[in-house]
Structures are given as C-alpha cells and as structure tokens.
Image (tube, rainbow, N blue to C red):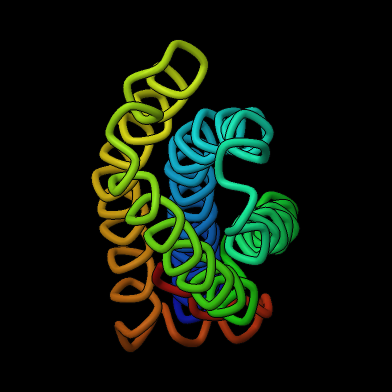
Length: 181
C-alpha cells in the first residue's frame, strides 16, 4: 500500500471523527435547550394552574370587569398553546417568536386584572384569592430566571453554529438557529 494512500485514509478517518464529534456536540447543545425549556415549562405550569381558579374566584366580586377576566383567560389559553408548540420543538425559532408574542399578550392581560384587583384591597386579602395570587406571582417571579437559562443555552448553540467548520456540519444535517425567548 502506497504511503500517500495510507495518509489519505488516515486524513479521511480523522475528518469523519471530527464530523461525528461536531454533530454530537450540536445535538448535546440542542438537548440542553430542551432541558432549559422544561424549567420554563415548570414555571408556566405553576402560573397557569393559578389563573383559571383565580379568575373563577374573581368572577362574582368583579362582575363589572368580565371583559378583562375573559381577556386574561383567552391570553392564557393562547400562551399555553404556544408553550405546547415549543414543547414539541424548543429549538424552532418561529415557535419561540410565537411564544414571546403570546406571552406578551398574556402579561398585558394579567397586569390589567391584577391592577384592578389591587383596587379591591379587601378582595385581594380574602382566602381563595390571596393564595392563588401569591402562587401566580411566585411562578411569574421564577419565569425570568428560567427564560435566561433558556436564552443562555440557545445563544451558546447559535454561537456554535456560527463557527466556520461547524457551519458545514450544521447545514449538512439541517440544523438551524434556535430562537430566543
């Protein structure tokens, strides 16, 4: 066997191992994004578990504000649908943008209802409302940290995709950018 053929085979094997390593690194980073999304989903689940019971507790005492309550329920439903879409593929940039838009609408509707609730001091301190409001606020406070964790993982993945030789592997396997939330 000629030396140049042995050298070419060795170079080819080295290149193959590098491609496999780069692909495995990108897949591990994508899995990290999925794990980070699960922490976001935990905060969303806790927050979502408080919304409908809280709205139900507020229906009678805040009868004049049914539009705000209905808007919050609708926004929460849309945010849950967008989160469910993110659950199926948390790396998809378009799904991340849809979730951010739904989350913005949900935050606006929630702040309106909570501002109205702040005007009713006696209602805010009553038994069914106070613990549900506290649970919602606790989950809402956990959400920015979980989002930052997700964004850190997505940014690291996107930076890895931007490196020259890895770009070739990523495009060859159809790996796209991750969206930030």
